[in-house]
Image (cartoon, rainbow, N blue to C red):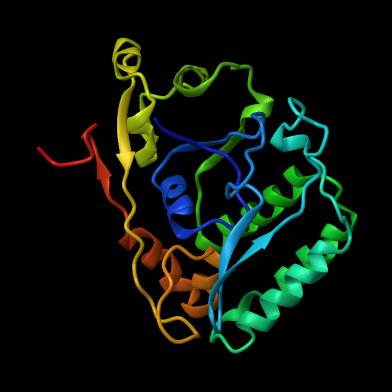
Length: 243
């Protein structure tokens, strides 16, 4: 069984979902500590002038050591969601396929008015985006599992807990995974070296690694899944290069 693990992210890029699609089971790493300036609560969207961040404001002040992603509180609750929805409408109103998802996204963002925590917001959006892309991968949450460790030990422990025989890592796993520990446990490690495909965006030029929302707004539903898989590169090489 192929397992991948990743922290939850806000409106993730296409490569995030492709690694899930290439797995039998994906574990959402939601029990770990929130990282500032990461993609957990923000992502990039296209604008007429390039790209901009959409960032969910979170309450971190005075909470060092108590910033578990699943329970992290949103600051400015009831306001950020309206701002984000209005920004998405402004940026993608003229994109050819944004109307396909307009009602669903509007409903989701309106429901976030009562969401006080980050975890449920990320889960709702990512459940929806996986559904739109046609992903059938089994999803589990680390907060509901028992493994507790750090870095490579945590990844290995989670893989064992769910019965993995292959771990599909992101490219940065080469920098911290304990290769010998995985080999001793009989778990093969492969690397998802995603190369983002190009597509026509509704603004002039092309900005790479935008939120998947950008892809859906500009590419037809059936083609979005095809485009996602077109960038898939999976390697067994720990050096990152074919030998």
